[in-house]
Length: 292
Image (cartoon, rainbow, N blue to C red; front, side, top):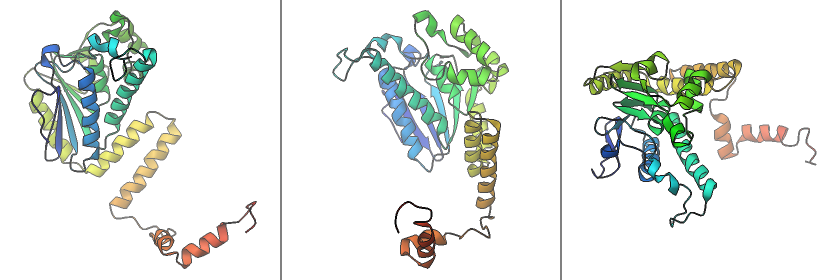
């Protein structure tokens, strides 16, 4: 994949690794409507790929992303012709687009890494929270300063954040709006690692090398059961673990189960064979209020 270097977002790939580069360095890579739309498209392109296993998200220049482009927010309620006809509904529609983007990023069947330098605030911080791994430089800073512009986060700044660092700290970050150090993000469990300035690329490459050595099917399963398990009760989460263990057994060769039919039911349905005929004949009107 190649992109026009003037594009606000560059999507490239090399073998099993794709890179999303937020490319508005003169405005600290803040998320314009165009850049956000391109991000949505990039995630969907990556989602369709079976070759890509790893995704790295970076910002051009010496910053990751300074959040949504607030100068454009008055246009969020405009229709496709630039007319302010949608009002608050238009704002909610735009937020839903961003929420879908973050959800799609979080649910990719790839391992994602945010490589953070400089600012990761607002929407930039929300991108990191939808990633699997976050590595940051010592000079990186983060926060949710939306409150001082009279707005509130829309796609993770209160929801995902509370799941990472808890309700009390999430209120602190959002209501005060202070900027925090990269080390504090690691100490609070929001990011993974802080590295010296100038060593970010090397650390990302080292992480990808470790991840590449893994059983990728196991990694995909682990991502799903951790993400979904965190959103549900213990017993339901344990059900995900149990089913994942069974799938692991199957893909490692222990796929045959004595009282399963090894695909015969599907084959019989296609051929309308005797097994399918018997099963449907017995079940079709059993305890039914229809007259067979």
